[in-house]
Length: 163
Picture 1 (spheres, rainbow, N blue to C red):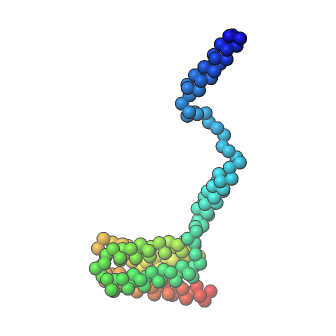
Picture 2: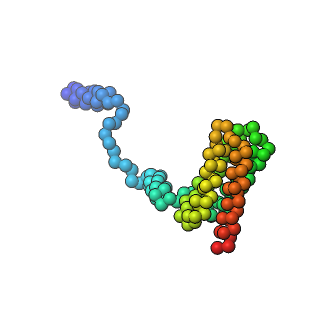
């Protein structure tokens, strides 16, 4: 019976010592849990997002007519800001940034489908965006460019409505 107790005692001590020898950090690589539904959803969302990016499709894509209206509205807002607050550089810069973002949402559609109109609009639009985002915007130049850009955008809008 003492041999049995001695053997049991040695096994218990061996188990305890084996347990004390580990740090709890398992350095083995376990395979991914294929039954985790969240993981496959993340992968499909990521794949869908990559597909959109590669096709040029973004969640910001909007109808061209609505996009032109949005850009026209932002040009008008910039003109109003320059008229009412010509010394508010931060507000002029912010509106210039908004104008650039709004144009970016439709730019590719305009460029691909209306190349001549695209070139015409950008002759005044990009200088307007640059001037509006300048450290010291030239308000007289902005006024001139907003009128020119607005006329071109209105003309383009009319063209879209008749086609």
